[in-house]
Length: 233
Ligand code: DC
Image 1 (cartoon, rainbow, N blue to C red):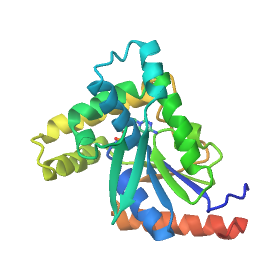
Image 2: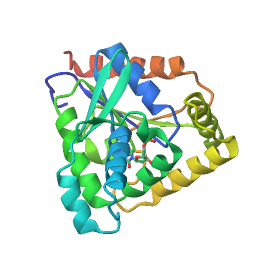
Image 3: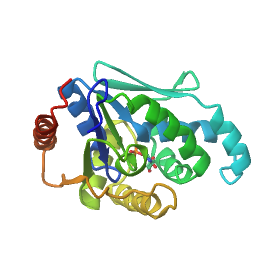
């Protein structure tokens, strides 16, 4: 196993609403690791593209635009702040419209190439929990520990609806489940880096598990991995 400076790389992939962000945050806290929410980075890119009025079909303009975007994630007191080209966009990237646009633009090569580079820079030293769709397959196929977190579309829709309602959005359960299914299809059917479970990922179905159960399972597997390889930090 590769020795990284700060610890191992933990990849958590899975469809939207499976609980990846919550789990990644708590797991990173438990292990003293950095969390990288790659979905938030794609969301921020989508917001910048939409604000710039760019036509996502114009790949040449998109490539030029993406070469100059700067997206970073900051964490303090368990809260994530997303900065895009120097502006805090944390709240604006979570609307249902932005979710669908993100799913669309994240299928485009110029966008993926730009973000792939910064994700690799952030994770390369280890000591990091990265969550997304293609972490274990494309971003870090050599990640030491990979999870594929899923749940039924109904359960994921229910969780997403609760989260959006809690943020003051007016959404219905039926629409939210439909959005989840539509995004699953867009994310899984695209040509570049589709949502797929890596061959060596450990599948966890969170439909009937609490967040604590999922974390305990992951921490247990992390400890097993560390003790079997001697990769102590
Ligand atoms: O995890 P999320 O719902 O915030 O992700 C938003 C969108 O970004 C999702 O529809 C797919 C895309 N995405 C991606 O293509 N690759 C990633 N590594 C992370 C997210």
